[in-house]
Length: 134
Ligand code: 5GP
Image (cartoon, rainbow, N blue to C red; front, side, top):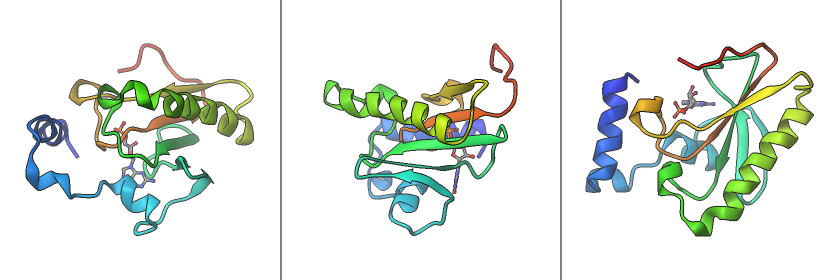
């Protein structure tokens, strides 16, 4: 999906486009087991699975089961859930042996390259990661 398509999805959502309201994201389909994924962890609140297009030897997505499109849409009621996602990143990093470090990323909106409008945390590791990001 290119940047223009990302921006279109984002602007459709901002406009409350009715046509998208009943469309499941790819992550909802993974949660519902309609689409396969290499799942590394799951409970009632969240699921974690390997990214289909990994940007590092370890690239896991940590996804809340509650549909929050992106960080901008999170509310104070999501405080515990957001904290849980970060602690899950910590635990999965340990489980996957990321002993020399890792990066946790949330892409929010078109400028950040968000491509799936369902909040998720990227966990990247097992290689040295450049800074600043592109
Ligand atoms: P974003 O660009 O929104 O921050 O991240 C979305 C991520 O979801 C991308 O890294 C992309 O590779 C990943 N992704 C998209 N579709 C699928 C899929 O069907 N399965 C898995 N495992 N990852 C996906």
